[in-house]
Image (cartoon, rainbow, N blue to C red; front, side, top):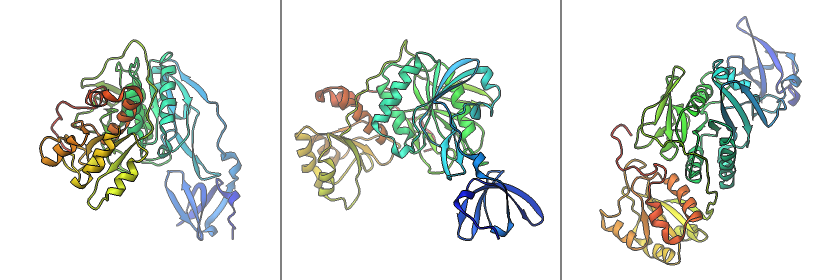
Amino acid sequence: MPVYSEKDRGARIEFTYHGSKYSGTVLGKNGDYYNIKMENGYDVFIIPEQVQIVESAKSHAAPKVNKVSIAGEGKEISLITTGGTIVSRIDYTTGAVFPSLDITDITSKFPYIEEKFRIRHVNFLNILSENMEPDNWIGIAETVVKESKRSSGIVITHGTDTMSYTAAALSFMLKELSVPVIMTGSQRSSDRPSSDSFLNMEGAINFAGTEIGEVCIAMHETMSDERIALMRGVRARKMHSTRRDAFKSIGERPIGFFQDGRAEIKESHRKPDQSTEMDGKLERRVGMIYFHPGMEIEDLERYMEKKKGVVIMGTGLGHMGVKFLDTIRNYTGNGGKILMSSQCIMGPVNLDVYATGRELVSAGVTWVENILPEVAMVKMMYVLGNYEDADFERIMRTNMKGEILCREQAGDF
């Protein structure tokens, strides 16, 4: 009977099941079973007696690649990778996912891409999106400024979990933008049959070839491979943990759609500026806290202690218990900034309707109608980093990049 060892990870194997032969790659061992990645992308577990190793793992180690690679002959598009599964594959010798930096791994899926676009691939980062930090946002923005001088559009791959935060940060920091900046990611890795990686990438590259001057997110509109929706970066939110249509445009229709090889821009959008300029200062001492019944005054005090600004996700129109009023009043009286958002996501905050809201305003709380909570936090970081404190409320209430809607569009939510 074969005995599993770690050196078998990544080995090509053959096995027989119900009289038929199959092949796959060893991911590891779980109890008494081999964990096998099938050629069709699915994982199976089989007993060691059925396994015959036909090729060692050595030839399947992750290849070494250059930081920058170029493919294609058409309009130049810069592809900036920061990690995530969309341009990744499994290194079967370790079981880890690593970025596949050979640009042909992407363009080979759509032969017309290399005729339509010349893609310059810049490997900027390789981190999980939960490890993304404000310093990384600044570095990405600086790379966008640099690449905008040579390319007609930019695609940024990103893990989906915090992509909306990065999209908001880039939207505010890039105060002028001469090219489209299209962010995309995937919910399912490229080695799975149900992966959304390649269609998301195809759509993003084509959107990067259009004439818009915004930071946007391009992801599946539905669970099927019908079309890709282009969403404004400051109005897009991940609404599901696993579905391929996880991202939704909140309160407004997507700017455009990609379908059958064609990108169409259907809604109003910013036009490109003459050049790309950035304000790269961010105030790190900003955070967000979720109000809930049973929350103690000490909880809020401890959270605000070292913060210059805090976004509170209140209930409904933007409320929290009146027992917190003195704490808030002391904080704002000492120069701290508080912005009230809503846990509802859809609909506006309005602190003028109920007595509680008016008391919060009197205590120094700022509110900004229907800005999304995470966008409010990122905008607060930007505003406190680049404007005087006296201008805080005015700038937060200023619609800088489409983050505040004059009127939400009717439809499902």
